[in-house]
Image 1 (cartoon, rainbow, N blue to C red):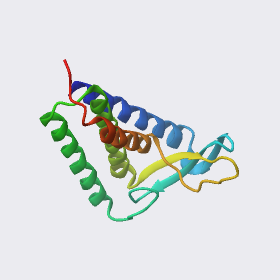
Image 2: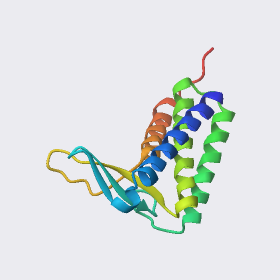
Image 3: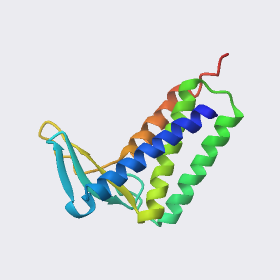
Length: 152
C-alpha cells in the first residue's frame, strides 16, 4: 500500500503545483491562453464543471462525493487483494489524479484545465490537466495489471 500512497502523493503534488503555476503565476485565469509550442501544445484556460470535457454538468458536491467514493473503493480493493507493483502504481495515479480534481472543485468550484494539444490541421477545442492524464493512465493500468498477483 506504501507504493500506492507515494504514487498518489506525487501525482497529486505535481498536479496541484502545475495548476498553481499556470493559473496564478502565469495568470492564465486572466490571459486565457498562452501558446507554448504551437500548434502542438498550448495553455488554454478552461473551467470544467462536469465530468469530462464538461459532460454531465451537475452539482460539484455530487461529483466530489462520487470521486471520493471511487477513491475509497479503490483503496479497499487494493488493501483486500494482493496486487503487483504496476497495479499499485496505477491505483496511486488514479487516486492522486482524482483527489487533485476534487481539491479544484472545492477551491474553485470547477476543475482547472489548461493543457491543449492540437496537430496536423486539427484544432482541439478541449483542455485537460495532469490529474486527467493520471486518472486515465491509472484506470487503464488497473484494467491491464490488476490481475497480476503480488509475488515475493
